Length: 166
Image 1 (spheres, rainbow, N blue to C red):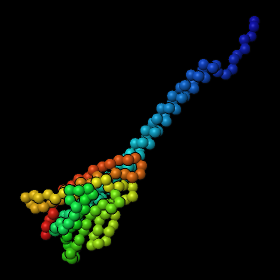
Image 2 (image 1 turned 90 degrees about the vertical axis):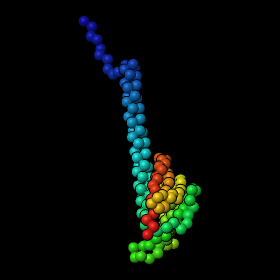
Image 3 (image 1 turned 90 degrees about the horizontal axis):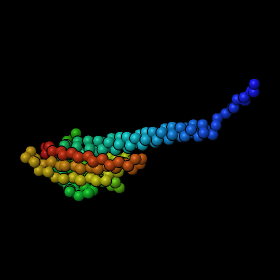
Image 4 (image 1 turned 180 degrees about the horizontal axis):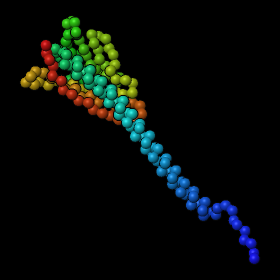
């Protein structure tokens, strides 16, 4: 009887099949990682812009509600501005102004300026509109913010505030 010698290793066809299966698995894994990173970047950008927008709109709404009158501004234009007259907590006259400087929303309280939006978010549009209602005067605020870094996203914010007129 003749002894047959056992072959060791893989044939060329087996290696090609294994390599093609491995390549397909690697492509699927890489694609899912890229998709996950994109979704994460989008959610981070949206979270940044949402937080900044809520902060700016809350501050504008609070100041508009406390104002006794609108003393000036650039209405129905982009970028708009508004100047409000009112009283502070001590009853002293108070002047508050909102405007856009270098794509950043700024507030000026009695001449002291500060920026409401951070460096990662820019204002594309800020429009103030005067509205007259049966209950008095109101101001409609239209703000549009866009992220500067990371995934680019633009979000509009809108509100209408009735002035108390104390």
